[in-house]
Amino acid sequence: MSSFTLSPSPLLSSSFLTITSTFSKFHFCPLPLSSPSSSSRLLCRDASNSNVQHVATHLKFVLHDALDASGIDTTHAREAREQFCSQIGRFTDIEKETSICINRCVDLGRTALYLAAEDDSLVSHSSVPLPVDAFITRLDDLSMDYCPHYSPEYDSSPEKFLESLERFLYVHKGFRRANSNLLEPRALHLHSVLTHRSGSTAMLSLIYSEILKMLRLWGLLYFDAEIFFPRDALTFPKGYHKQKSKESDQAHIMTSGNLLVEILNDLKHAFWPFQHDHTKTLFLRAATAANCVDRSNFIGESGSQIASAKAAQHRLDRGVWTSVRFGDMRRSLSACERLILLKNDANELRDYSILLYHCGLHEQSLEYLKKYQELKNSTQETSLSNSLSTPEENAADNLMTRLNLIMMEQGWMRPSYARNFLGNNSEPW
Image: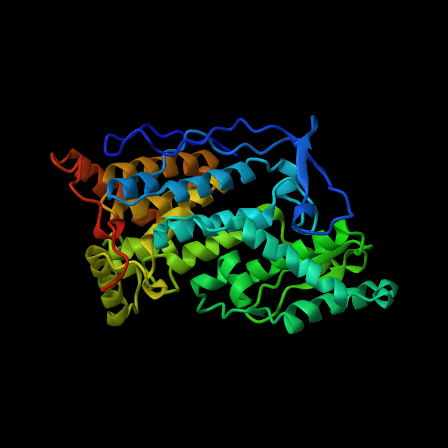
């Protein structure tokens, strides 16, 4: 993973989140099989042959410091972010591309709960953190609860075993797939999915894989099982015997790294503050609201869509941020920051930049937009790609021009506020 280095901004204090990459190399050591409980999860120990995936260093993020400056205590949010970074820092190049059904140093269940813990702290302002260990126990208890449903007759066929497990998960326990078009926050965070039994495809796949790993640890899973990750709007994640898989199944195998990206992308889309016109990318929606897009390129854009964009900006100016239907700037910023940490994608820097622009944090927005341009230019393969123009590139260029003009204006260097939604507003009315 490439390392992004941003110079400190004079706007915020020097307490920006800085992540060091001093992680050791690890391998797994299973605990004794005699105590099938929540303490039976896997441990990481030193290993000299693993190529550990380093977390990007010296990234200067804005969200937590801006909230602190607004009088909001981000202690629990910072702790959850540090734990998330600690987990993804243990990724090796191989493990990141390994199926979620295989044991690894990165505890995917715990990592997903750290994502939920940070978001919960940002919204609830609770004096106590989300009880991650309690929900880990609840997750492990699902595997324990399956044991009375297990019968030796299932040993005769992997298909019967998986059918029994899915009947337990989707019928007996009542886990169901949430509407992919109207994803609620509780369908995107592991702790609430465990509570309400309704979740996104990524969350149900994660729960399924954690059960398989525990059953394998206890010696009940005797064959190489894989999970079919559905790409449609209705199908449930299903298990299958990997030795009997077809070539078409390969596209539906979810890797550890991609699962975390999938979870964060779901959060980013659900909480993006500009929910109008789903035919556009997230960046174009925000750029349209900022008047950085030439509307002549969007023939047929309705008056209601234009009005929706203006209404979204008006809500942000008033501090309306709590309803998922209208987005949530804090959690969308958080999702962007964690996606930047997790993968080397220039578009994540660009999307983060446009959100910072809407926050009134113009200097930081310009810094990240410059980083986007640098990374994009360094990864373009041919000069032909440089000559191609897309609405996203035009909008990014317009945003760059505007930010440069703003920075030349005296008084814009240090805005006196960073939009109301970064203040202590807990209700949209």
